[in-house]
Structures are given as structure tokens and as C-alpha cells.
Length: 598
Image 1 (tube, one colour):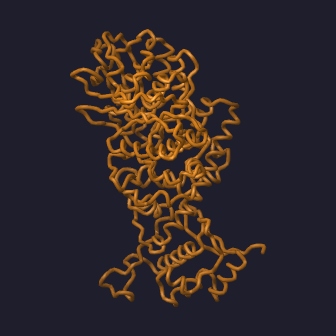
Image 2 (cartoon, helix red, strand yellow; image 1 turned 45 degrees about the vertical axis):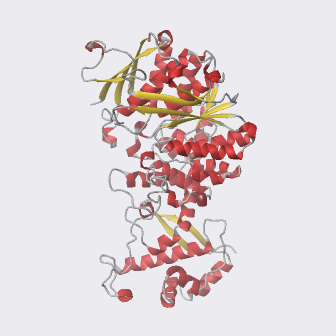
Image 3 (spheres, rainbow, N blue to C red; image 1 turned 90 degrees about the vertical axis):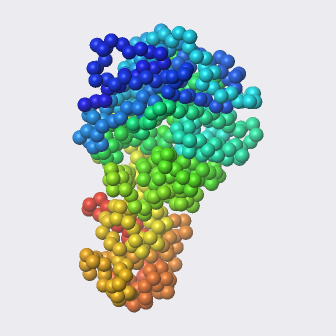
């Protein structure tokens, strides 16, 4: 059964029972007065900026805040695909007092608002607007800057402090040389200083007349905690905040900087059906924002997504190309900001952390994204066995990697949701569909490249065979990589192998260790790749084995006279490093020799 909620916003009163389902729980939401249970504060605004702000945009700020808080206040039920119907979706009814009920009650406005939000969060919405008598002034929500700076913005962009919004700010300020207002929603106290620091780093590196203005927005709830932390409606709040700031500067455009794979966000697994594959900046959501803001402005209002045809790795490369890749470490991408610590700014388990780590490895910028920033290492750390952490992580990597080889027919038959994006985007349908297909193909290739680079980066861990059972690498590589270290009390170096490990598995693991050592020595997947053969002593050092064992395992890989055969393959450039895809969809790290035409 769906969760039914009736939200009485402002001084709205409960209607007759016949107007709403009898099981609807009534929740009051109030932004002002002695009984307020929500606080909205927009900082660093000047009085000159708000002098001509239309009442409609003050209404919009309140409506978006109420919707965002209602979204958080209403729990969802179910976690698997079988629960995707009534238990996952909710019915949210709103009675809101506004300054312009004549506008908000217009059929085309109410229809736009309800359809846009329904698609965005996969819930049912209904609105009833009435007149707000004696409304609070917009100053109620503002914290004015002490200085009237005279700043005039060329562009207004939502600024979360993540990699995509960082790249967007860099693109506007350093590439397009525009004066930019960065609008941030400070969703948690821990994220506020991170956004401030990142803004400060950008300001310290740009020309004096291009220093961006940062406008942080606080929304605090009093007396109740969030029941749903998915925040599906957050982008409506972000868009509304940015549109209101745009109206203050008499502009009719905002720009959302989000990579196309995240925006289109095709469901990567059965566990992510419906809006659980979030639609925050999906083309259809963006079209809904644009339609609503145009109706409010009584002129065309543009909501643009300049990074729509870029992958996350493309985004990181754009930061690198601008010469500001060192700023990557200041950006925070994690969705679990409440668990953030001063050192570990990322959980390492959410999809945003996985996406970020793949992007920096794909763009060969891992040194600017220290692994110490992750509470759980994305690739080698042990994940919780609660919920679906391992399943979703493995599904994401596997599905994105498969995109590199997928055919058009397979792609469009598997991902019918592409049609929703095609319908919402300008241009000929076949051309738009082809661009989406090529975007995902390129992302698949980049994910494959990222995995190769990560294997090289973590080659010591792989060679030691010390990965936790619930690590992502274990999932990707088929997981039969038991720890071959001899337990204490079993005879030291000459002790018995770990219980349950067969002789065949032991040999396979020894080969795997040698392959990882060769990957590390030759620098497979990096710019430092070299065909210079490793010496016997170098292999002993890399594997921590004696000379006899190194020779025996090398003979398994290269045959009789292994060192000379190996050197000959290096000399003729006939040795290759890659990930081999297994029949079960997992991957095995290989360092193999192949005959070539040379």
C-alpha cells in the first residue's frame, strides 16, 4: 500500500475528509512564525539584488522548500524489484498558501508542476493553492551581505561542490571567462565548509574581475528527522533556488553541470528500477523545469545542461585540461555526507563514490584523488553485507563495462527508457538516440580503461592475495582468490596451506600473483608502460618468492626456458596486459604473451 501524506503548508487548514484518502497522515509544514518547523536562509544576498524580485519567485522558493521537506518526511517501502509498485511510490498531497493563487491554480501550471515532480521522484502529487494573506516579506529568508559589491552575474549555476559542478564552474570562469553566481544547497553542516573551501580555491586562482559569487542556502528541519534520504526532489529545489537568483539578476537562464551518464541514468540493475535510478537532471526533468520557469517569467527561460554529452571521465579530463586538476581533492561527491570525517570525506560504498573513482582512474588522475579520502577503499575495501552494497557495486561496474561492446540493437532493446530522453531532447530522434548510444559506448571504454589502471595501482594488494571477500575487486575477478598466507602455528614457511584451498587453486593463485607482478613491472595501462623485461631478482622482489618458485611459476606461464622466452616476447613487443572477460561476467587479470606479425 502506498504511503499517503497530506501536507498543510503555511497556515493552510485541513479540508473535508472526503477530499483526501482517509488513511492520509496529516503533516503541518511552516516556514515562518513561532510555530515554524522549517528554516530557509539564503546568504550573501544584497538588498539591490532582491529589490525587483517578483512575488512568484518568492512563492517558488516556499513551494520548492515544502516539496523537498515533504519528500524527506515520507518513508518509502520495499527495496527489491517486486516492491517497485505501491510500496515504493507515495502519494503526496499539498495545500499551500501562496501570494499568487491565480497563477499557481492555472491548469497548465498545476499540470506542469505535478507531471514534472511525478517523473522526478516517481510519486503521485496533487496541489491545492489558496491565498496567503499578510505574507512574510522575502527578507525573512535572506541574510544580507554587509557589502554592496555591485556584482552582476553573467551565468547562474547550481554548485553542489562535487566534481561536475566544480568542472562547470571552471568552464564558466576560466574557459568562457564569465562572471558566475554559484548557488549551493547546504544539505548538511559537514558539507558547508567543503563548498566554501572549494569556492575559495576557485577565487584564489582567477582574475579579479571574474571571481565568482557564492550564494549558500540553508534548509533546516526542526523537531523531525528525514524518513527518506534519497532526496529525489532535491534538483527541483536546486533549480528553483538558481532560477530565483537568476530572476534577481534579471536573467532568463540557469546551467546545470552534470555529466550525461548521470543525467540519463539508465537503470543498471533490477534493484534500480523506477526513479531509484535517479532522474535529478534527466532531460525530461530539465524540460519540466524549463516549462515551469518560462510560465512564471512570461518569456522563454532556458535550463541548459552543457555536459550532457560528456562522461564523468570526460568531466575530469576537462578539469585537467584547464590546468586545475589539483582541485579534484577538494570536491566532495559522496552521498553519505553525514558520515564524513575530516580525513575520510567519502564513504567509498555509494554509487557516487564508485563513479568518481572510476572517472579519476579513467582520466589517469588517481594521484589527485588520494585513497585515504575514502572510508572504505572503492576497489579493495570490505563492504557491508547489509542491503545491496556488493550487488549494486558489481552490477554497476559490469554493466558499464559491457557498454563498450554492446550493439545498437542490444542497447535499445535493453534500455527502453532511452525513449523518454529522446522525446525530451531537441533534434531528430534517430540522431539523438545515436548520440546517447555513443555516449554509453565511450563510457564503457573508459570504465574498462579505469579498471586496467586500478589493477596496476593496486597490484601489490592483488599480488598479496589479501583482498577481503566482500571487496569490489573480488567480485570483478571471479572472487576465488583465497588468502594463501600460512596461518600461525601451522609450520611457518613450510606449513600447510589454508584449509579448503586445493593444490590446483594454489597453482592458479601463484600464476595470478606472477601476472600481477608483471603488470606492475611493465606499467600496463599507464603512460609509463615499458617493454623492458624484469630480471629474476626483480621478480623475486615483486613476488617475495625465492628463485626456485619464481622460475617454476614463470615456466607455467611461458613454458620451458621461461626467462629467455619472456625476454624474447618483450624484445619483439609481443607481451600484452589486459582484463579477460570470463563466461560468468567476471574479469581475470592477465599478463600474457601473444604471437604477433612481427
